[in-house]
Image 1: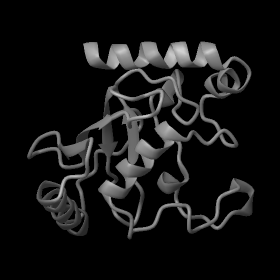
Image 2 (image 1 turned 90 degrees about the horizontal axis):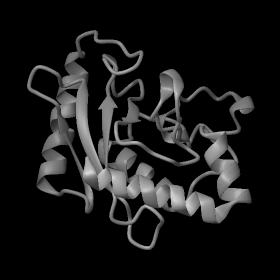
Image 3 (image 1 turned 30 degrees about the horizontal axis):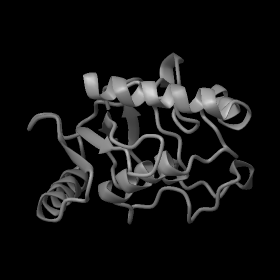
Image 4 (image 1 turned 90 degrees about the vertical axis):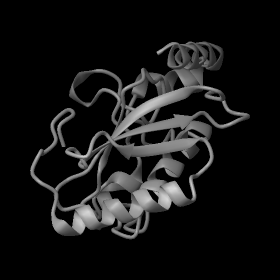
Amino acid sequence: MSLRGGSSAPLSKVAMRRLLTELESLARDPPPLISACPVSEERWHEWDCVIVGPDDTLYAGGAFRAKLLFPSQYPMQPPKMVFTSAMWHPNIYKGGDRDGEVCISALHPATGDPMTGETVSEQWSPARTIESILLSVQSILAEPNLSSPANVDAAAQMRREPDGFRAKVRETVRRSLAA
């Protein structure tokens, strides 16, 4: 992985085979309002993604760009997803080394540690696919997880100042379309 603290080690043969299979599946049956593909033939460990904000959500109509960054041992290890579009969302880090990084259980390594507050079934599994990751991220745009925020300021604003939160998200949507 090359974006913000990832490994750029070569992908294993298993990872390459899996990514090729997933790309073929996405091309054959693309999910609505989502796209993803490798950045280039030389950089299969880094994929460009676009997620369109779902209808009937604050993010509706936005076109949000992101990177999926795959470790050399994918699918045994989870990828990272980092928005390159500016985002204002409780489950997406804002600022610092993790700016834009998505924080959802599905991208956390399965540890079985009860201190995480997540069950192993919610965490990463090699059975998860790129499509399932992108759909999970699209779903948090509709329903943020306020019990475990990555962006505490966005979560607090959503709870205490919903009008201000909505205005900031509208600006985020507008900026996503101007990029």
